[in-house]
Length: 320
Image (cartoon, rainbow, N blue to C red; front, side, top):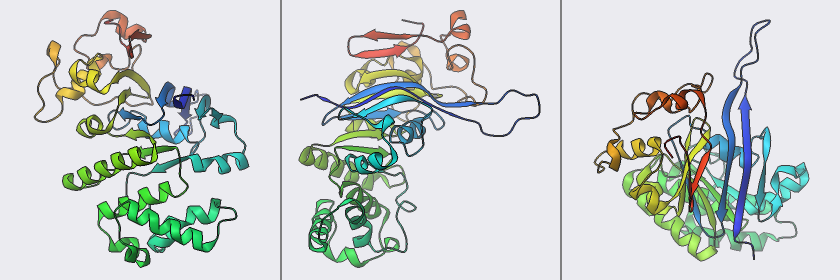
């Protein structure tokens, strides 16, 4: 059996944010620019980076919630990028998403039982109402909610409970791949730990594969097996969890780690990251990180680095 659950190849998504004047060249924002990665079955890939680095656009393009401009995406060997409308609709049961904000991702006019069972009603051809109800009750129990919660509206729940509802809805069709778009960033720290523990338990029980998007490095360290670091639409480093936190390769990764309050300084003397991420409408030439990098060289200003592969890691940096 192929161990690769998700294979993303050369994914690109560009936007034209506003109209240009007569005679002006079209302006393109390269939100996702040639992104490639794989995720093995039953594992978790963490995706980190500052706001504006392209994390959310990458996963939404990967799932075709927004259409990518180019690239290939394979889920369990199926070419998602080339599926027609009806085939994609049928295949979506294999890949689901949990959104960042549990307050806005649930329909406030629907009761919880209806929210969780709706995917079964839409995709479950030939499934009886009794089977749908039994599945809904099982999902409530699986995510730590009570049977009586099915008759309540989302506004009657706390943030952590709403996120449990979102997870139950995502699991309704028994997917193999679950994409988690900053699922705990809107929650209190104590509740974050409960949701992360729940996700780990569900992964082990259901043999799920996760793509976990976050900006909180402590959260990513807790749940990920491998981590990719994005900066201005591109991956700058891919590393194992242990390798990234013990010996980060890219200057941006090192600066990110040093920016965590209370964290021990990372080796090689890199300081807390300086400045802000540049505008994607006008990215720097060469390596996009060079204006903020304390070790930039002349080549960094003029030439974007190719990936250097070292064992099971890769880094896009002229230092290697």
